[in-house]
Image (cartoon, rainbow, N blue to C red; front, side, top):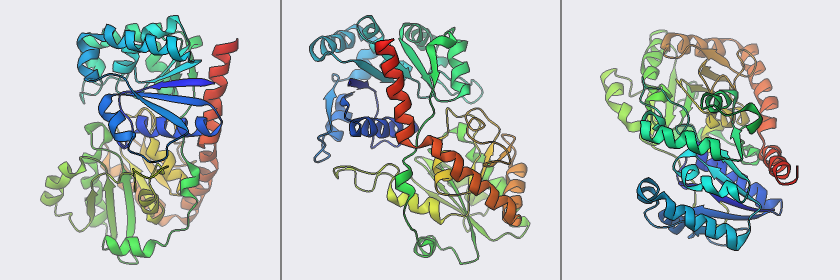
Length: 393
């Protein structure tokens, strides 16, 4: 098949949607599909610096795409319709209802267009000011966009329900989860050098959390959980990795937790300009595989990519019974779930895993089994099957 991807953000930005698109594109290319990627001009300039990318073509949309999408979306629509007329794509895969879906909605008159939401385009939470749809004008555009798409992909049941809240029929929605590159985790890691790098002693427990800073991630509840662990005499270091995470430093200083909590700004791709960079990077995978357990205290997720990465690394997981998280983690099966905004329950679950070897091993074993269904080779086949169904049924 000849498949066009349209998105407004791509790697080396390390969000869930960017990692998803990069890995799906690479897998579809490996399966001999012809892939063209339409990106904003700045992303195009950055990505085309990668050497020897011969398995797909990267094409700029226009310049000033965000401004144009807001004030002159017809200009971009004309550009995309012209691309379709010339290139004759079989399928358009669009990432994000706004602005990408908004400017691509007319393509569905000519060719099947599949939309995969990236989260903040269809999820809304006024309390934490999350979701572009909180803007009534944008929300109307998203409503129109969803109705115009040929088909919608929902990462989870939570996303499926969000689509239905916009009045989309269940028949127009297919659930396909996010994927993980399991091959990236098939490496042998000696944790001693990494533990030395971050000043961990041999008997210290390494707790890991990964993800960009946003109030929805629930990171503000980690210091209180860390204080409970500290008061109970546990010897640990909690590493939090994510873009913008340094905003937590003030709380850590105030709570005298500098010996227990380490903040690391985003660990990106090791060598973005090599021919085929790994996502997630080897540096991040080594950190996962050096940890003792993983904690995700999120209040709201679309999917929770880092959860399946932690599962692939063989880590016991503590997360929250929140949308997106509970779609991936089954309580006391492949992880432990606690109520959101409950640092005491987070610390109690961490302690439970530390003190119960059978529980820990059971969670790890189950996670390693369940993560296999998220392997990109399996997930990409589901996309391929959907594309063929829309083309030939």
